[in-house]
Length: 330
Image (cartoon, rainbow, N blue to C red; front, side, top):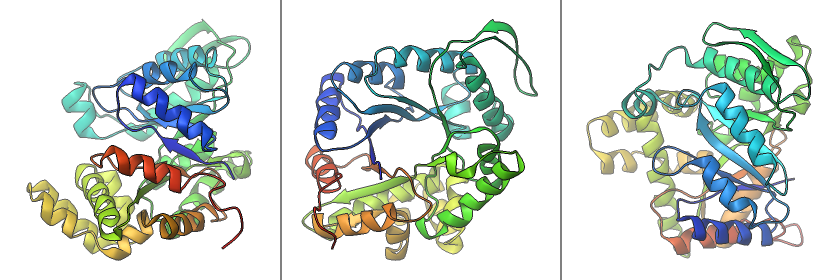
């Protein structure tokens, strides 16, 4: 069972040190997100010469602010300096980020996700030239880049999961309740089989929001804040959570939308924390994380420490959940 971790938002040198620490702890991949203020590919390039073996990945970069060709070129260039593999996680993001930050229309996100994944695969193939006439993007007569770049899609709804089954190498579910993962993946698997693909070849790499503290209530509060932010900020996230918690998700989204952030956080129930995250003391959090990692559907769980917690909590969490932390079964 491989295991990844999302790099926290720190300066470049601090991020490099953190990645080295994660490698020393036995993690197999370091991933970085991207919203605003820090560039994912620049960050990973800075990390690349500090580590010796781990994979580097984006989790995630959006499909609107860069073209498929730009994404493919950036990932292909990163493979030249990364000591391990490069995994390219892409997703549609949210209307707020795409329209209000990037000034782009949030138009046909699922179709764009599908076509972007197809084009990146074509551009990073090992020979020939690329011609593609799609519904959201078309390209003509450009050479391939000959780079090994598996494409992971952050797909929540059924349509996006079907796109994953047709064209992606991996799936990055976020805010899909852990007990719902198998059923959600069946949509991916069914579509893959219909497309003549082997669903077992699609890596399932769920975000696992995680926090460790001596006081379990502090750890759980961190997860509540994380879940409230996502449920309140994106309709896709709200719908994913609503697959198991429809009433709670509605209350959280409503409170968040009205600016009642504390009310939104308080509306995240204990059952939601357990179904959507990992929180507790080092021992209890590790036990919970291993339950998620042992789910039959899961191939590569990714530790995601919520934004806003202090550096000590971040470091303690990745140490507590590191591979090999428990030498014998519980």
